[in-house]
Amino acid sequence: MLSSKTRIKRRYFKRQIYIGVGCILFVFASFIFASCDNIPFEMISESEEDAIKAVLDDRSFRQFEPDVDASPRKGVILDFFNGVSLWAQYAEGNYALNEWEIRANDYRIERAADGSEIKIYFIKPRSSRTLPNKCENCIETAGISISIRNVFDSKRIAFKLNDPDDSLPSPFPVFRSWTKFREDEYFD
Image (tube, rainbow, N blue to C red):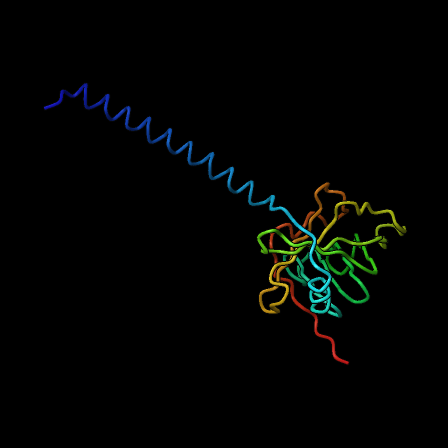
């Protein structure tokens, strides 16, 4: 039979081992999650790009945070009519306080090496701000991109807006995590 001092020492060392292993697992998991966010992206073939653009062409997606009737609310519209457009608005009650848009006639597409998402980059973007004061090309657009998951699945398509330098004006930052946008329906 072990003395009580020996049992206490063993419990102490077991606890230290569990704590050490837990810390190692925590550091390892943090490293894994951090590296998952930095998935390498690659250019896609012209035929893949044409297929993705054909799926997005003439579609519009919108999302409001917390919802369309809330006050205050943040709104974002992504539309793929004649290129790509990112429209944003911050409103309180019936009044918009900030409103702006970034648009381009064309965009380039990259795909994550693991195929989990695509990223859209504006080609020769133009910007305009309507509120609080009007201006043209006054919004910094460098580094801005739109990530898309499940681009070929209308029921599961999701977006994430990337602003790595936090250069976009209010209502950003918004929708940095994967968000299902509501698709607008247009009829000819």
